[in-house]
Amino acid sequence: YLLLLVSGGHCQLLSVDGVGRYRRLATTIDDAAGEAFDKTAKLLGLGFPGGPAVEIAAQRGNPKAVPLPRPMKGHPDPHFSFAGLKSAVLRAKDAGLYSGDDIAASFQAAVVDCLTDRTKRAILCVPEATALVVAGGVAANSAVRTGLEGLAEKHGLPFFAPPLWLCTDNA
Image (cartoon, rainbow, N blue to C red; front, side):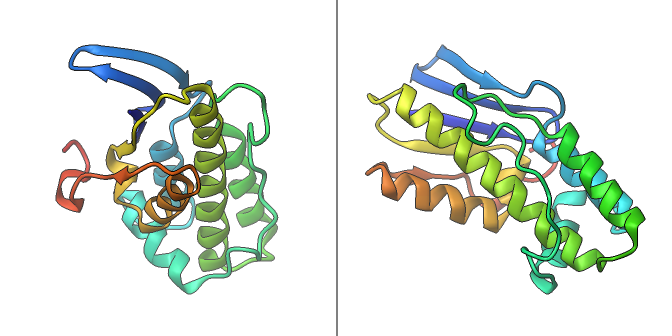
């Protein structure tokens, strides 16, 4: 199966051939998605852990309100990058033109777009994958789960995610 491990410390795509038999297909070239959620929460004064706080704020915001980048989207290899997105969130906040909820919603939408785009690239690189699995703290985010579930469905793959209580910080 194909595993997306996405947390505060990791953002990797792995081909899992069996117990102890993993092949890393991609990783982040800078910051992990969960770290970007935490930094965004801090910038917006939402507290820690950032992922749940950003998700709640995002539910009140407009995900199309703030034009944020989608780093690495469309790039031929499946690696991730979130440092530039964090910088864009800071610039959006400092501009004073957007509500915190709109920034949170736009940030979350950008992360989902990046994760699904990079995972789609990995699916194309591993046509023998039998399922798409997501794990890690960011796997608790409902928008991330929904995006990945839709991606798996488009590619005819079953989608698996741990129960939410196993996706908490340091689970």
